[in-house]
Length: 109
Figure (cartoon, rainbow, N blue to C red):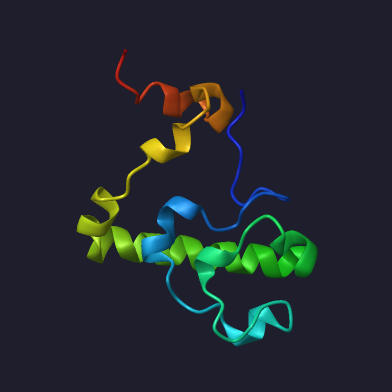
């Protein structure tokens, strides 16, 4: 399995699990008329690829990366409190489309 690069065309731009750190408005110059003025970064789902040009989606993903990097430095407590277990409700681990390197980080059952 090859390592894929973020963002993935047609998939959420903003991971829903990072909602607590992506609670900032989408910059006006990037949201255009596709989103209301009060739209937040965490709202950038898979439909964003249909609403906005691919180049804009990639710029928004760069903003999300910057926000996450900032959070790693300043919001470590918020990141530790993110509950990922709800992602597995009704799913198998392979449904998450994780990369091989991620599987090696899971403890053995």
